[in-house]
Amino acid sequence: MSAMSALVRVCAVLLPLLLPAAAVKNCHPRCRCEVENFGLFNSFSLTKVDCSGLRLGPGPIPIPLDTAYLDLSSSSIQTLVDSMLTGPGYTTLVGLDLSHNFIAGVSRGAFAGLRYLETLDLSHNNLQGLTSGSFVGLPLTDVDLSHNRIHELRLDVFAIRGHGRPINVDISNNLLTAVIWNPQARPPNLQSLNLAGNQLRTVPQLQGVPLRYLSLDGNPISVVKGNAFVGLSTLVHLSISGLPDLHTIEPQSFSDLRNLQVLDLSNNTNLRSLAPEILSGLESLQELNLSRSGVASLPVDILSYLPSVRSVMLKDNVHCWRRRRQGQFHRQIGTASSREEITCGAMGVAV
Ligand SMILES: *[C@@H]1O[C@H](CO)[C@@H](O)[C@H](O)[C@H]1NC(C)=O
Ligand SMILES: *[C@@H]1O[C@H](CO)[C@@H](O)[C@H](O)[C@H]1NC(C)=O
Image (cartoon, helix red, strand yellow):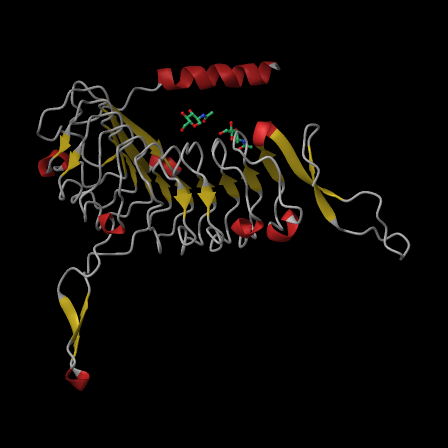
């Protein structure tokens, strides 16, 4: 290590200690409040409040004005009532961590005031479902509902359809048709949804949600139906791992997922085979994980179904990868055939 880099390291360690800690107004004595300044001349600041581990009463805990991130994890919360997340400081929240509580119920208006909330962590609670409309009007992009007891998730949690005042009445042909529209029901903007470790028996219908990441790991789903992922063309990473009951994936299940790059089907011990038709449509797929599953071989013509694939893990951790086919030359001198193949590791299955 050069003297210069040693000096840089020492400064990096000491500088935060030398700077006076910014006093944060209205910080509850048992929370830790922190203001991060950034931008030219520190003109922007971000307030983070960590009240984790605090046993909360029924009322809202006071937090500084302009709080962006609030951690209320492990706080023994059982029910989220309407008044709990209200007051100064709450309206500016961008991220909220409510994980590792005992939350079994969320009243419909509990999140209503959090109109800038993008990231919500409700993992490791006791939720069986969510009241319709609970998340309406929130600009949520990232929601973690993993490790609850959810057996059904309906899209109307995020947006109410067919609810609200009629704004357009068409009386042509004496046929009264009311087009019902709710001005607050913006379509959800959700990009990441974690539903791992719940009680879902079917893939929830999430058509039209612009998801990029979805996890359904560890749910008691036994069949993935042919239309399960319809309309999820923005999905990049899909994880369906550790489903002890999963035995069938119907053909065309993934046919809309043309932007999917990673598909994790690992640890599904009762999934015994993968028909090629299951893989149709996955034109961007780069990684397929079937390790610890019951699938030991790949369809012979896998590259015609997965033209972008780079790596496949099979049962017993056999690794397969893409390479240019060796020793084949076109008649024209010097131009090697660009045909490629999938080769599997030592214990691999010839394909
Ligand atoms: C495999 O799945 C089982 C059943 O869901 C789960 O208990 C286990 O933790 C998973 N193993 C790994 C390595 O993910
Ligand atoms: C494949 O899945 C196994 C089991 O869930 C996991 O341990 C491994 O990291 C995954 N491999 C890749 C390349 O994602």
